[in-house]
Amino acid sequence: MKPLKITFIALLMILVSCSKSDESISTNEDSKFYKGMDLSFQSELEDYNIDYKDADGNAIELLDFIKSKGTNLVRLKLWHTPQDGENSLEDVKAYALKVKAKNMDFLLNFHYSDYWADPGTQTPPVAWQGMTTTQVKVGIYNYTKDVVTQLKAQNTLPDMIQIGNETDSGFLWDHGKVWDEFSNNWINYANLVSEAIRAVREVDTENKVRIMLHHSSVENAIFFFNELQPYTIDFDIIGLSYYPQFQIRDLNLVASKLNTLATTFNKDILMVEVAYPFTLEWNDNLTNFIGSVDQTIPEFSPTPQGQKAYFEWLATTIKNIPNNKGIGFCYWAPDWVAFNGNENTSTNGTSWENQCLFDFNLKALPAIDIFNYN
Image (tube, rainbow, N blue to C red; front, side):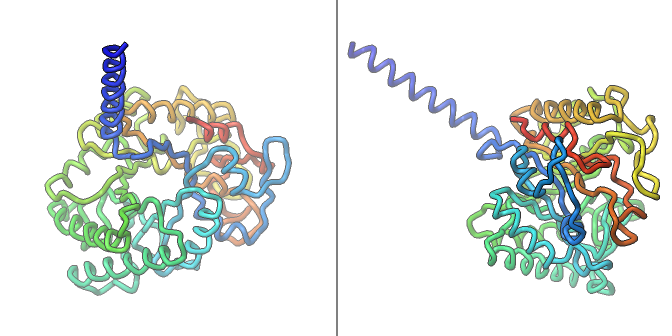
């Protein structure tokens, strides 16, 4: 029996060694698969006591409900000095406390703007306008460090921090712009991003925060991250938006692009902005972002079941990204329903209600079951 015992121990050692080797393949240490929601509108919507319901029509408390359905990540955007008073640091701090109290992870989305930032608009905060690039570098470092310090002080240090929103064109124009006549300006973009990351790392002394860079396009992200390769930026996650109405709809090509990103750059991939319509109808007086079938994917109808089927495909596609690099998804504004409120986000103005995870009666849709995906 003694030789058998030695063989058994050796076998155990081999298995443990293989297990450790497999763990080292992915930078996602606990192999968590993120099923997230961007709830940045909640700091405003809560004021209107919207009667969200479960699928059976029973009233729910939103955070309790989405956690019970499997949501484990909440994303919140931050504007520097908000033009409309929403998404301020105080709003983020208050909602982050609620998120952490539910034991969900928190993703902080720095826009580095006073309003929406995206590939076509990357306007610096008014407070930074008129500065030189050198001064903006100091500004982004100080601002980022202050925000993260305040969040850490109230025990809501983000689990992830996103440096800019959909920065295909760079950010903080023209200092960090990389489009058009600024196509040779990558070094300034990289330097500004690195200053923000340095600020985060100095506050996060235990190295808990994972840094994300965010691109709006699955098909064009390879070029973007290739351009950044020479600058060895200290980040952990490639964040991507995928809205079919604006991007490729060939399902095989989407999967191929994701796989190429993973194998080329060796970074985890989070589909940080995704959504899909459950109808082409509307529930207010504003035209929706998606209003015709040619804006959808042929394989998935704009119906409650089509919306669910789309997310089943998406979650499986992310899970199948090589080397465990696909770490999850985050649904954008699942709660931005039509309601009686102010002129910007009410029955007079939401353009998103047919892409929510709650129907026009505010009942949870079948797609919410995908958040239990393992």
